Image 1 (cartoon, rainbow over the protein chains, first blue to last red):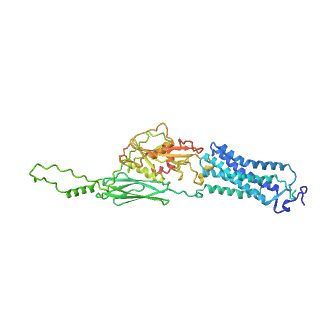
Image 2 (cartoon, rainbow over the protein chains, first blue to last red; image 1 turned 60 degrees about the horizontal axis):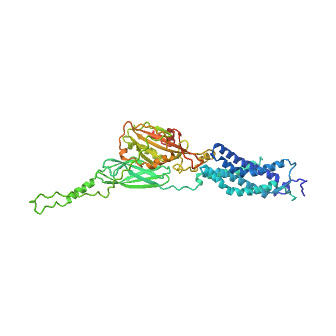
Length: 162
Length: 369
């Protein structure tokens, strides 16, 4: 039986499980790349004057959608950086796939909302209104994604269940 | 990282790109139903003297900037020229009336037709009718004295012959409004220097014909005429343009509102740059009077109203006026910029690009110069 004091290779232990560190690493990559795309787009649009004098409204909408999750990811990564040795914590691959899919959908939805603004509205005031309207479907999805990621990034469960 | 990034790019980026393309592509949206064409065919005079040429001007509404083809059918006489402005020529002096059928169709398959009757003002039919009635009239009654009495009273006046029903009533002469004079300050203007020196131009109507022939194929189906000292002014409808003077594709072109882009390149442009709206009104002024521009330019609302306050055809008394060597035709461009920040902001008259570039990018310069 594997214990926390005797690290095992989680992949060899259970083909349906995956190491938590690997999961965190992959999710972090997804979130940083996806967020970078969104930030680069909005930064460029802000500098180019796409949103005229409503730039602050766009950032007020954008930052709460990304920053809480990014902050949590960075915090956990920083905490893990001080630990020595490989962690033996594993998670079900099924749940990892669900969390990854939800994250990808969430980031894709944010990018989609930003990209669709000029396709539906020419007036900036209408675009800002659409951003606020999009909170109706982005908000619930954000809650689900945050729950999934919170479990994964705070999980301490080992293969032995201790 | 090296293995995850390509996987991520493979899955998420194409999906996001596809979403954007699907949204932006016009075919992804339901096709907008275009309204039916509305055709107005108006002769320059009706009734008209037999033997004289009658100009027929066709204007079409709801063209949506599409190419139009005009055709004319006449029961007598012949049509000279093609397009929206043609000449009707009588061939039979005895003909009292001619039925003229105007048809138009565009490259979307829409069509419209108007039939009207052009009548001769020589009243030859009436004359014949009068003579016939005179012959058929009973001889004047003699007095009971059988001619030996006092002279008979003067014969009653001849009965008034009502005009035949087929003769169209004389249309009311529209009162042509005067264009602000001197014209308001324009964004730019250009004198069409070669005008009107062409050998085929002898009247103001010829200038109008040439302007109309240049404007019609480029989607400027809606025009208004004003009088100016020594000539006339032709005003096009307020249209939405790109910053370089190219007209926007319909339906945004003649929309007063800033509509979302309908083409993918326009979408990309709107995604990465500020996208204010640019509007333009072109005013052609043909006059023998030199003129300057007034100190202040018009508002966009004023310029937009010009198309509504003018008459739809050049009145015959102006159209038939002969040209003199001092008549010139100038194009004044009124260009407006509408911020896209808020719909409550007013559009402002801007210097814009120069008039020649404006006319070139509108597709008019080649036909006008």
